[in-house]
Image (cartoon, rainbow, N blue to C red; front, side, top):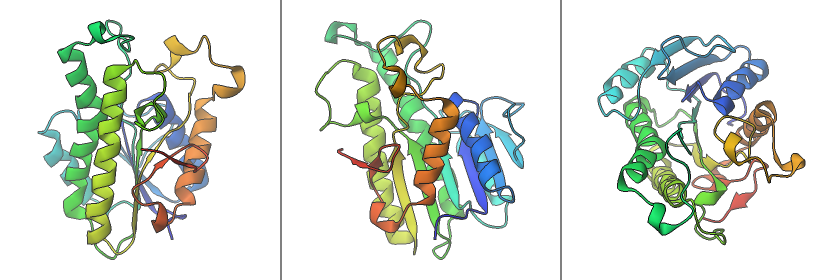
Length: 244
């Protein structure tokens, strides 16, 4: 039911995994309409979307513009992939201890890792049709799993991803009641060789660091293989269900 999308919405489209996802879905589904959203006015450089919108999804005022952007198509997207996220900046990295936690950095992590996904869902919601099947996938992280956390640290990133996972769980319940067929999931792509993971690759075994194209291929495989029984789940890159 979900394996042949005719329309795909890719948000946060200028990141490393997102760029690879754009390339992959166009190769896999060459006739699909591909809509992209990013803060970059020029849009993705590695592929050409059908339409692109410049928007900062941390801003609540972006919701109206994204809503109009989506409504310009005859039907809502079949797939929505939200890749918005942050782990570090030049000034801030993941906290190793409690005394490194700062309110400003935690709130910024929440805005980018959670609020962007909320705003995108709010923009999409009015366009949804009960009879139109929908896949929603938010890129999350295994370190956001409370049950799998045995190391500690990385306070802001872990908390923001745990919050994102709860948002996905809630959204899956609401849209599962509203739509005849939907699957709303969070997906952990594994450690991918992008700017996000670059400062933390030193101790990662070579076979555990994946290229962006490999991660994109795996994510598309997971999405194409989804069924409604996986609605509201946190999934590993191979489709395995991870603990919340």
